[in-house]
Image (cartoon, rainbow, N blue to C red; front, side, top):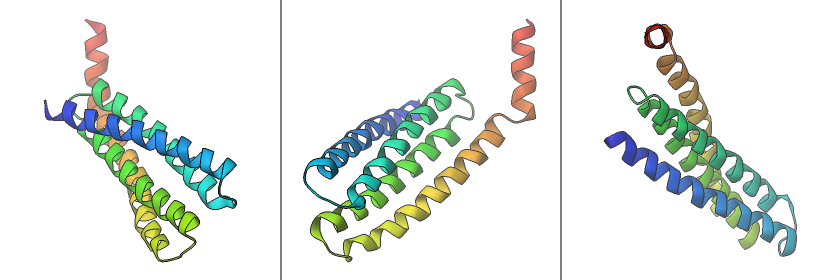
Amino acid sequence: MALRKWVRAAGVLSGLAGAGGIILAALSAHRVSGAGLHNAAHLMLIHAAASVALCGLALALPRRGMWFAGAACVLLAGSLLFGSGIALGAVLNTELVQMVAPLGGILLIGGWILVAVAAAIALGPSQEAALHQKFEK
């Protein structure tokens, strides 16, 4: 039951991150010049989509899906921090808020490493043998 709550939260945050990415892309195209908002929009959209995919994997593999749900949450936190740091720096034209971007970048790197760990654990040899037995019946 806890897994579904994490996946629901990650799904909601993915939708908000995706919407935020579209808003930043529109602002970049129509209001604020420079690559900052465009880069932040791109980053948020990619990680929102990746998080939705990870939520699907989490639900498909309920025994070990928490690893994928955790990776989705870390990626979302990183993309929101990184993207908002870049966006606020571009809009407010200050480097002070951009200092949050490195923390977001560290979370993004950690989130992608967690994706690799989740895949290795959840899709490892023991899981493969269980799936093989399930389909032979």
